Length: 362
Image (cartoon, one colour):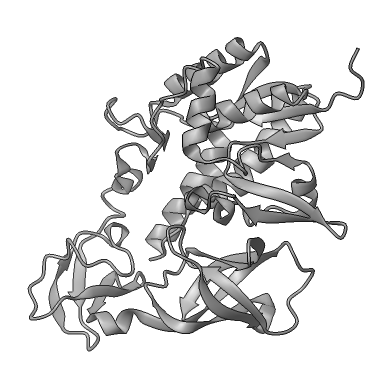
């Protein structure tokens, strides 16, 4: 009889990554249970064909896929109803940020509030007991000098540590990322070898089914307004500020002698400000809502690599304390399209130091 078997709950999305995470943990002699979130309340009027998204009518299919994996592995499966929590903490936050002229990242908020928050709370309240929580994220947790650190995945092209920078040291001490050392191709191979139905399921590409964020806003909220240049001259009309983001060039519907880009979203006056490309560059940024993992506090300038969006190569910068608990990040070379509402995550080599929400560019 095997003694001291560790119990782990695996967050299952119905995709190949979380499925293989569960299988690998079972092979490692953990006692595994699968848990999935119910988040779609049916209020979004999207076409049934638009299934491959985090939030949409494809949720039933995703949950069924997760349940089939658990049956194949011979483990228990539970669904946790978080529809109200998702609406309040993810959808409402997303709407409010866009209406304020910002560009939020719903995946980071979902991980912080839902997946590593309410999901675990509700699971334990329902009577489930487990010592660890695992997901299919491509990231790693390592303990160094008594501190739990969040590190990039071995496959940097799939690294998802950017989404996870809000995790605390305590959360990391109870978190497992079984895929942190694998490449995606190998993960699919493992799924096929185990006969998992999720082996060739497509990945969710959008937050909202169909990728149309405007579905989240009423006609009264999406008001037409002016597109103006830096001097306030009207160049055209926009179709609602929620359709635009900093750095956008296409779809502006205005003619000019040289390319123009969105450089500011003036929500208070319902205006989109456009400029030539050189106006997009910034020497740095101010961020708030700061989360630190590898250090206790930021009390001096710190050389880092920083990412100001997921699909960006981390660039050299210096992070330093700013007033009222905020931080200032100064780039070694000016960067383009610094978007308020997005997240700046900073690293030392492959270790996440911390991050925060971009307030404005410098």
